[in-house]
Image (cartoon, rainbow, N blue to C red):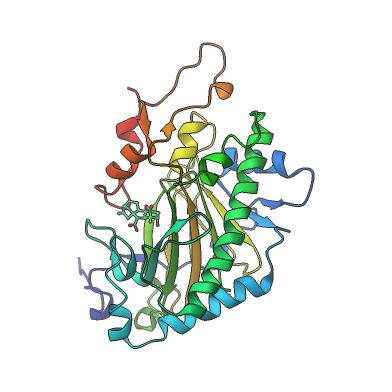
Length: 330
Ligand code: GA4
């Protein structure tokens, strides 16, 4: 057997099969957030996929475009200037390394803490007022989408009060994170049938994550209950948001919603820029199935933990690990 080494530029970055037209999944659920049927559609999508697209969300195109243009400007800077905005941990600029345990992807990014509805003062980056203002406007808007989605979920699940889930994110001191990802093209692999992993497969630890990207595809989700695992490509839509169910929401619903495994495959010719808002609760928030969702005699599938416990454990894992399994009851 001949084992080919990765071309030097993508050394250390795992390769994936390049997606073809047949991998695009046209059946991604679409939720019209302005429609009276939104609550039911959200619950259905969370049960079947842990993932859906949101349209008619009310966020102005200019808010998204301005933040994207500023991000493009930031990443176009000289490498030395961007490196001065690092390291990524706890917050700032990072390149290729994801987390602290050896994961690598073909991307550069900004990892930022969010306080209330804007970039935390604890983050010195971005230092440009124009970029920061654009991000703050975007974050306020996307946070509002996330809380409306959490309210639709509660309504659809029949949980009262309807702000039971959204309040966890709106509370002072909730643990919200924002990520700006730039996946440069990787022409070295063009025509070889394989692509660099932009962001390796993982589930998000929080309640929900809300993603928006430019028109370059790359996001893939794993379909639930498919053996062997089946990855499908999500057609890009720069006017929509995409929502992922995270591990914490899986636990709060006692597994009724399952967190979605997802990953990003790099395009060989086009840059992908994405924004992801991760809606987490306060560190002290107990993550346990909501009593209203437990049927008679139904027990929690999970051991007791707080978001702080989960987060601490998550940062010790590798990206692709199943982070929930140590918290499952035997
Ligand atoms: C996945 C979701 C978010 O991007 C993130 C990621 C975090 C990081 O990039 O530092 C983690 C990853 C994410 C889960 C496991 C740990 C932590 C990288 C990693 C290997 C910001 C988050 O909250 O968890």
